[in-house]
Image 1 (cartoon, rainbow, N blue to C red):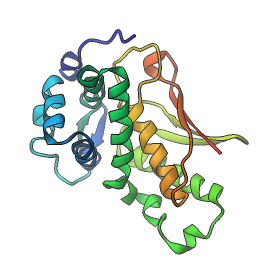
Image 2 (tube, helix red, strand yellow):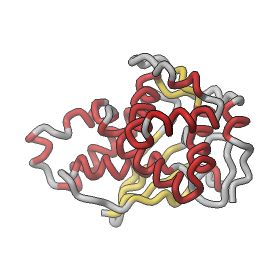
Image 3 (tube, one colour):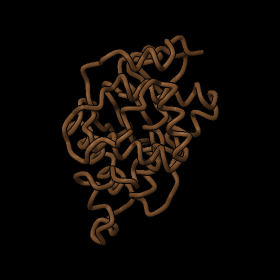
Length: 214
Protein backbone atom coordinates (compact mmCIF):
# COMPACT_ATOMS: atom_id res chain seq x y z
CA UNK A 1 0.00 0.00 0.00
CA UNK A 2 1.46 3.34 -1.08
CA UNK A 3 1.55 6.10 1.48
CA UNK A 4 3.03 8.65 -0.91
CA UNK A 5 1.18 11.90 -1.74
CA UNK A 6 -0.55 12.02 -5.16
CA UNK A 7 1.75 12.25 -8.16
CA UNK A 8 0.71 15.86 -8.80
CA UNK A 9 1.96 16.81 -5.34
CA UNK A 10 5.17 14.83 -5.76
CA UNK A 11 5.92 16.47 -9.12
CA UNK A 12 5.74 19.94 -7.52
CA UNK A 13 8.71 19.12 -5.29
CA UNK A 14 12.35 19.33 -6.37
CA UNK A 15 14.99 16.70 -5.68
CA UNK A 16 18.06 18.56 -6.93
CA UNK A 17 18.99 15.35 -8.79
CA UNK A 18 18.70 15.08 -12.55
CA UNK A 19 18.70 12.93 -15.68
CA UNK A 20 20.07 14.51 -18.86
CA UNK A 21 17.55 15.66 -21.44
CA UNK A 22 18.43 12.77 -23.74
CA UNK A 23 17.56 10.12 -21.13
CA UNK A 24 14.22 11.81 -20.53
CA UNK A 25 13.52 12.25 -24.23
CA UNK A 26 14.12 8.55 -24.90
CA UNK A 27 11.93 7.55 -21.94
CA UNK A 28 9.03 9.73 -23.13
CA UNK A 29 9.31 8.25 -26.63
CA UNK A 30 9.21 4.78 -25.05
CA UNK A 31 6.13 5.67 -22.99
CA UNK A 32 4.43 7.08 -26.07
CA UNK A 33 5.08 3.85 -27.97
CA UNK A 34 3.68 1.73 -25.14
CA UNK A 35 0.73 3.90 -24.06
CA UNK A 36 -0.10 5.82 -27.20
CA UNK A 37 -0.05 9.60 -27.48
CA UNK A 38 -3.35 10.12 -25.65
CA UNK A 39 -2.41 7.72 -22.84
CA UNK A 40 0.87 9.53 -22.27
CA UNK A 41 -0.82 12.93 -22.32
CA UNK A 42 -3.43 11.80 -19.79
CA UNK A 43 -0.78 10.39 -17.46
CA UNK A 44 1.33 13.54 -17.70
CA UNK A 45 -1.78 15.61 -16.99
CA UNK A 46 -2.55 13.53 -13.91
CA UNK A 47 0.97 14.14 -12.59
CA UNK A 48 0.87 17.84 -13.53
CA UNK A 49 3.79 17.25 -15.88
CA UNK A 50 2.35 18.10 -19.29
CA UNK A 51 5.06 20.69 -20.00
CA UNK A 52 7.78 18.11 -19.36
CA UNK A 53 7.20 16.23 -22.63
CA UNK A 54 5.38 18.76 -24.78
CA UNK A 55 7.58 19.54 -26.55
CA UNK A 56 10.04 16.72 -25.93
CA UNK A 57 13.27 17.62 -24.14
CA UNK A 58 16.13 18.48 -26.52
CA UNK A 59 18.46 15.70 -27.60
CA UNK A 60 21.42 16.76 -25.45
CA UNK A 61 23.12 15.80 -22.19
CA UNK A 62 22.25 18.85 -20.10
CA UNK A 63 20.86 17.65 -16.75
CA UNK A 64 17.41 19.18 -16.41
CA UNK A 65 14.97 16.25 -15.85
CA UNK A 66 14.35 16.29 -12.09
CA UNK A 67 14.04 12.95 -10.28
CA UNK A 68 10.88 14.23 -8.58
CA UNK A 69 9.17 14.50 -11.97
CA UNK A 70 10.23 11.00 -13.02
CA UNK A 71 9.10 9.54 -9.70
CA UNK A 72 5.75 11.32 -10.05
CA UNK A 73 5.35 9.94 -13.56
CA UNK A 74 6.05 6.41 -12.32
CA UNK A 75 3.46 6.89 -9.56
CA UNK A 76 0.94 8.33 -12.04
CA UNK A 77 1.04 5.06 -14.00
CA UNK A 78 -0.35 3.30 -10.92
CA UNK A 79 -2.96 6.01 -10.39
CA UNK A 80 -4.04 5.79 -14.03
CA UNK A 81 -4.01 2.02 -14.58
CA UNK A 82 -4.09 0.51 -11.09
CA UNK A 83 -1.24 -1.33 -9.37
CA UNK A 84 -1.00 -4.31 -11.71
CA UNK A 85 -1.75 -2.36 -14.89
CA UNK A 86 0.65 0.43 -13.97
CA UNK A 87 3.40 -2.06 -13.24
CA UNK A 88 2.85 -3.69 -16.62
CA UNK A 89 3.00 -0.35 -18.42
CA UNK A 90 6.18 0.61 -16.55
CA UNK A 91 7.88 -2.70 -17.39
CA UNK A 92 7.00 -2.36 -21.07
CA UNK A 93 8.18 1.25 -21.11
CA UNK A 94 11.46 0.21 -19.47
CA UNK A 95 12.04 -2.39 -22.17
CA UNK A 96 11.26 0.14 -24.90
CA UNK A 97 13.54 2.66 -23.17
CA UNK A 98 16.55 0.56 -24.13
CA UNK A 99 15.72 0.02 -27.78
CA UNK A 100 14.60 3.63 -28.29
CA UNK A 101 18.10 4.85 -27.53
CA UNK A 102 19.65 3.83 -24.22
CA UNK A 103 21.49 1.10 -26.14
CA UNK A 104 23.55 3.77 -27.88
CA UNK A 105 25.46 4.85 -24.75
CA UNK A 106 29.04 3.80 -24.03
CA UNK A 107 29.77 0.08 -24.00
CA UNK A 108 26.15 -0.75 -24.90
CA UNK A 109 26.72 0.64 -28.37
CA UNK A 110 29.10 -2.24 -29.13
CA UNK A 111 26.71 -5.05 -28.22
CA UNK A 112 25.84 -5.78 -31.85
CA UNK A 113 29.49 -6.06 -32.90
CA UNK A 114 30.38 -9.59 -34.12
CA UNK A 115 33.40 -9.70 -31.79
CA UNK A 116 31.12 -9.00 -28.83
CA UNK A 117 28.63 -11.64 -29.95
CA UNK A 118 31.43 -14.22 -30.06
CA UNK A 119 32.09 -13.88 -26.32
CA UNK A 120 30.53 -16.27 -23.75
CA UNK A 121 27.06 -15.15 -22.73
CA UNK A 122 28.05 -14.37 -19.11
CA UNK A 123 30.80 -12.04 -20.32
CA UNK A 124 28.32 -10.31 -22.61
CA UNK A 125 25.83 -9.82 -19.80
CA UNK A 126 28.51 -8.49 -17.46
CA UNK A 127 29.71 -6.00 -20.08
CA UNK A 128 26.18 -4.84 -20.91
CA UNK A 129 25.11 -4.29 -17.29
CA UNK A 130 28.41 -2.61 -16.48
CA UNK A 131 27.96 -0.35 -19.50
CA UNK A 132 24.43 0.59 -18.42
CA UNK A 133 25.64 1.36 -14.89
CA UNK A 134 28.43 3.52 -16.31
CA UNK A 135 26.00 5.43 -18.55
CA UNK A 136 23.75 6.37 -15.63
CA UNK A 137 26.68 7.20 -13.35
CA UNK A 138 28.53 9.28 -15.96
CA UNK A 139 25.64 11.22 -17.47
CA UNK A 140 23.10 11.53 -14.64
CA UNK A 141 22.86 11.90 -10.86
CA UNK A 142 21.65 8.29 -10.57
CA UNK A 143 24.73 6.40 -9.37
CA UNK A 144 24.79 2.72 -10.31
CA UNK A 145 27.18 -0.19 -9.89
CA UNK A 146 27.35 -3.90 -10.66
CA UNK A 147 28.17 -6.77 -8.30
CA UNK A 148 28.58 -10.40 -9.31
CA UNK A 149 27.66 -13.49 -7.32
CA UNK A 150 27.83 -17.16 -8.39
CA UNK A 151 24.06 -17.13 -8.93
CA UNK A 152 23.30 -13.65 -10.24
CA UNK A 153 24.26 -10.21 -11.44
CA UNK A 154 23.28 -7.52 -8.90
CA UNK A 155 22.57 -4.08 -10.34
CA UNK A 156 22.70 -1.52 -7.53
CA UNK A 157 21.17 1.96 -7.76
CA UNK A 158 22.10 4.35 -4.97
CA UNK A 159 19.41 6.93 -5.73
CA UNK A 160 16.75 5.70 -8.14
CA UNK A 161 14.86 8.42 -9.98
CA UNK A 162 11.82 6.15 -10.18
CA UNK A 163 11.09 6.05 -6.46
CA UNK A 164 12.48 9.38 -5.24
CA UNK A 165 10.36 10.79 -2.42
CA UNK A 166 8.01 7.81 -2.29
CA UNK A 167 7.19 5.32 0.45
CA UNK A 168 5.82 1.89 -0.37
CA UNK A 169 5.48 -1.58 1.07
CA UNK A 170 7.25 -3.22 -1.87
CA UNK A 171 9.75 -2.29 -4.61
CA UNK A 172 8.36 0.10 -7.22
CA UNK A 173 11.19 0.86 -9.67
CA UNK A 174 9.47 -1.09 -12.44
CA UNK A 175 10.87 0.92 -15.39
CA UNK A 176 14.39 -0.05 -14.35
CA UNK A 177 13.35 -3.71 -14.07
CA UNK A 178 12.09 -3.52 -17.65
CA UNK A 179 15.25 -1.76 -18.77
CA UNK A 180 17.40 -4.52 -17.25
CA UNK A 181 15.20 -7.23 -18.79
CA UNK A 182 15.71 -5.78 -22.25
CA UNK A 183 19.43 -5.17 -21.65
CA UNK A 184 19.86 -8.86 -20.82
CA UNK A 185 17.82 -9.87 -23.86
CA UNK A 186 19.77 -7.48 -26.09
CA UNK A 187 23.16 -8.71 -24.91
CA UNK A 188 22.23 -12.41 -25.08
CA UNK A 189 20.80 -12.32 -28.59
CA UNK A 190 17.19 -12.77 -27.55
CA UNK A 191 17.21 -14.86 -24.39
CA UNK A 192 14.84 -13.93 -21.56
CA UNK A 193 16.16 -13.55 -18.01
CA UNK A 194 14.35 -13.17 -14.71
CA UNK A 195 14.92 -9.72 -13.18
CA UNK A 196 13.68 -8.81 -9.70
CA UNK A 197 14.02 -5.71 -7.56
CA UNK A 198 14.73 -7.21 -4.15
CA UNK A 199 15.40 -3.96 -2.29
CA UNK A 200 13.98 -0.47 -2.84
CA UNK A 201 14.56 2.85 -1.10
CA UNK A 202 10.83 3.50 -1.18
CA UNK A 203 10.39 0.40 0.98
CA UNK A 204 13.09 1.47 3.44
CA UNK A 205 16.26 -0.05 1.95
CA UNK A 206 19.51 1.88 1.69
CA UNK A 207 19.72 1.33 -2.06
CA UNK A 208 17.62 -0.20 -4.82
CA UNK A 209 18.99 -3.62 -5.74
CA UNK A 210 18.02 -5.58 -8.84
CA UNK A 211 18.93 -9.24 -9.30
CA UNK A 212 19.34 -10.87 -12.70
CA UNK A 213 19.56 -14.65 -12.40
CA UNK A 214 22.33 -16.32 -14.35
